[in-house]
Amino acid sequence: MSYFKIKGVIPPMVTPFNKDDEVDYDKHIFNVKKWGEYDIAGYLVLGSNSETVYLTEEEKLNLIKLTVDNKPEGKLVMVGTGMESTKETIYLTNKAAELGADCALIITPHYYGEKMNDEALINYFTEVADKCLIPILIYNVTKYTHVNISPKAVSVLSKHPNIIGMKDSSGSIPQLVSYKGVVDMNEFNLMVGTAGIWYPALTLGVEGSVQALVNCCPGECVEIQKLYDNGQDQESRELYERMFPVNAAVTGKYGIAGLKYACDKLGLQGGLVRKPLLQVTEKEKEELDNILKVAGLI
Image (tube, rainbow, N blue to C red; front, side, top):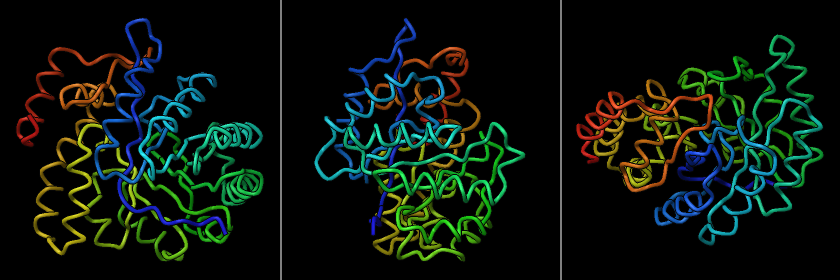
């Protein structure tokens, strides 16, 4: 059995780029070490907030290796190695496994989205799980893929010994409840993919999350869970509500460029976004500064 419990928050690590549009590996190493000072569960290399779709295979493998080599002992390394084809997903996941990754977060294929029905997704994740050297988790992120994996498909896949969980980034509480109803929460890591529903998810028994907000506010994201676990429901909810506008800003309105700016402001190394994404404007920086001030972060 491949299952292991994942409890806590994980940053979908930003990838810092320099003015020449190249990956700044020194900044990446700095971030790995800085996040490691907090009580996070681990790291996600190559998430949506990592601008993974803009990275070459060589860059992806370099980022995985540097994360494995520089993380504190005991921290999990999850890798986003899902590609459009089954073959490429298995290939990249096993390359990551050889570098020391602990598990892989596999996005739903989506280019031919109208054909990604239950049968196609069950077949895809089953074959990937059968042939990968490390456990996998399903990644449901409808915002980018416009493919939403059904509770029926999740129910089937959750019984595979090498599929140990899923990250649902849809932000839908009703759907989260539906997923919870079809999996064994003692044998399957049902994780949320946004800080926007972190506190509500905790009240539903969810114990793990991969959140963009952890990039710039690791301490606060960890604290929401710790307070809740200590029975301090009101304090947990109040901190969640204080962080809510920050999360909405860095994952919605201002996007990855805004998230990276917030990282730079709060002691991490966000760096620049890779083209064709646009950098934050001076006006956007002022707006973000105000949001961070209201939240008591600067």
